[in-house]
Length: 163
Image (cartoon, rainbow, N blue to C red; front, side, top):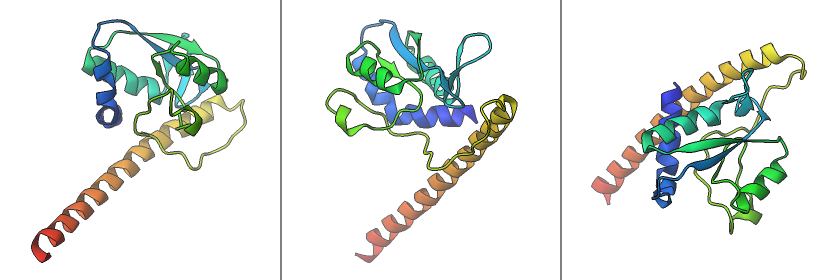
């Protein structure tokens, strides 16, 4: 399941990494408090969906990197990436029109129009629900992929044989 998500993200941003020809260590920013997207685990290590995907991409592309633990203040994190203090920003990243001149974006790999809310103290429940939602989202993405794959092939067939 993690492999599917990682390869999906890899396909969307693989061309971004061609700019990194020199084997330098990339500075990868991880916002600390956005579970299940990015957070710091009990051992003080970066964790979450974005971190898992990043590690798969870095491994596949033979990228050297170090994590930079960031605050939850995304305005400061955006400032760090736009001022080249970071090479990659993980976490809850959405396209910001005002930063298009300074920041390059990958295709989104997680769409979040709705979520589940619970008390901040319910850490165990939040972890349980977050894991279930991640599993569910993989099925949704797979279903959309299959639907559009079939749809595109039907359109190709109709255009090829009936025009």
